[in-house]
Amino acid sequence: MNNHDKQSDVATLINQFSVAPENHDAVITLLQDGVEKVIKHLDGFISVRLLSSLDKATVVNLAQWQSIEHAQAAFQNPQAQEYANKVKTLVNSATPMMFNAISMHEA
Image 1 (cartoon, rainbow, N blue to C red):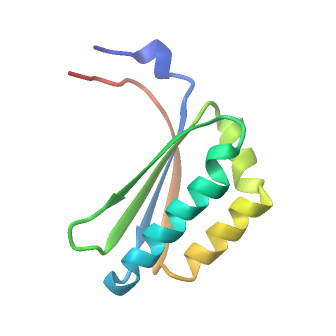
Image 2 (cartoon, rainbow, N blue to C red):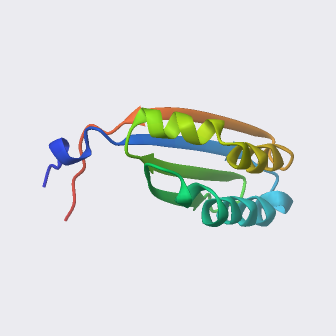
């Protein structure tokens, strides 16, 4: 099923973190904590999915927002910035990118 119309306004942040395997668990814990305490309470929040590569060298944060404006407001939130700064101390690099949903296909 193609849900193009329902998904077209959703803004998706995909942030790929390169991590040393020994920092993997701390990064995951910090991201989970930030979502539970801050992110999920912000206007326009839809969901977060955290993914981990099997070798624990990469963590991906896939966050969905009702609009680009909601996502941008979240980036400016002081509490969210505090968590982002903590994460930066534990990762080798971060590659954040914003996407518009084009289509979604489900079984």
